[in-house]
Length: 113
Length: 108
Image (cartoon, rainbow over all chains, first blue to last red; front, side):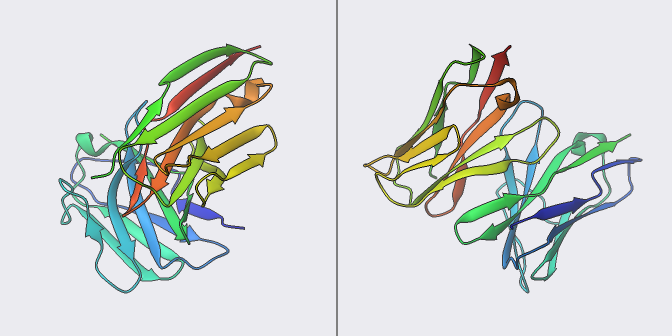
């Protein structure tokens, strides 16, 4: 149990376009999901905490208007990178909380050209 | 905020050797978690610890929740090539914090 999926697994987009990434908990309900960003050879950087039915909580320095998060159901959270720029290229990983444990998705590699 | 110090940053070992890594914090945590991340994939939960002093095994992996609640270690016995990856500790107190990771390389 505790499987989390992400879609797409990789995406290439042009600068100025928006990209939506989906995170789903497949076999459990998650009131809380998290979005992370990871640069090569670095640890996970928490971007925001997504709570079902309420607004996401963003970490300091993360632009909420640029990284739109929607947690519309207990099994789905989405991250939309708006007006993407090359510096937004990164590995984005979501996780879903079950108790004190977090279960991670496989990640989405975003490349902005 | 609560910070985790994970060490070592990297390890190069021979297949068959045992490995030990640890995380320490200046703050108390209620839960310690250990994850492994393979390249290009999300972290996978290896072991979860909930009580001070708890010692838990998962196959060749053993982890302990320190008595002071400020540290945890992970041991891997008889390493094999597929143990290669980055190991992250995570502590849950006011929120979840991650260590910087230990990059493990196993030479056959």
